[in-house]
Length: 147
Image (cartoon, rainbow, N blue to C red):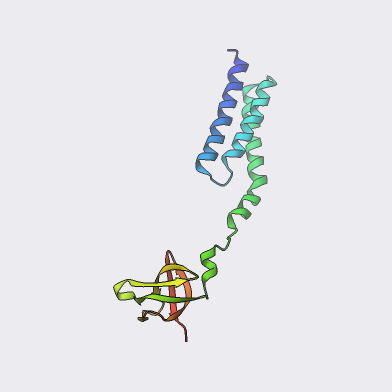
């Protein structure tokens, strides 16, 4: 293998490494930009530029790609999308198993789905009582008796 071929293989392996890292971690599009920078450096190796130049091109292109895409990535990360369970807040459910927080018991049915339920104020609510969903805590509905 010639020195040029070794450098091309080096940058190709770097490209593959960064792509695998991106796929494996799924982090906010960081490794993919390093992979693209490695690809650019590989083209520099194909053009027979010095290894120092290739490294400089890799570093500069990595920085530029990261800086240009950072605002987009931050915007995507900060977006919160309401999921179906968040849309259940404020709806009416029916108690199907008496709710007693001290016994860690209670179930309600909401639109055909059974949920574990606890009361917001710690009160006991008998079976058959309509309740209002106040919030969701993990897999439990926090409810209050409808008045």
